[in-house]
Image 1 (cartoon, one colour):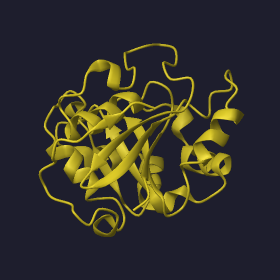
Image 2: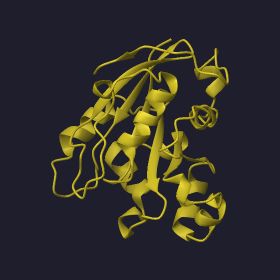
Image 3: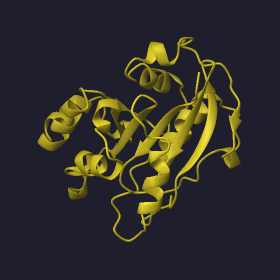
Image 4: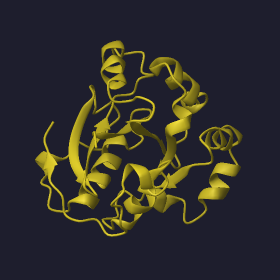
Length: 204
């Protein structure tokens, strides 16, 4: 099987890098900080270019790709969008559209369509909306989405696929549940089990 790509997209500061690290450490809790994405609270973008880490997920190599904010007018995104296109291809990836609970901005309106224009295809068919800072939702994720019409429309455009991450949690269960929401996940991961086996992470 060829490598499968998990592409993290979204605005700066929503938790893309932290979510990538949540996935990596769920699959291998023994990773050192140098094997993870740089992630810290910041008022300026921490990620300025596409980066990836490769892990073994249920016997298949998975490339986890962290990306800069492609909608930031202050950085040259063209080169990075072209780099992302190498990995973000129909049938070979899942897109995690990262949105932070409690920090929804006007820039998030229409983000799905704008990213589709940048990447040149209907990524919604392979997208799961990933809500970060899930501890702030207090179990009211459905209500949180329903109360925001444009968010509700975006989730429905993505086949009603959404998932909530508590990035402070070290429990791998939330990552296993995420993988089960990937369209056709049983075909992508024929050896899928509820418990991750410790895997090797390769530096990009």
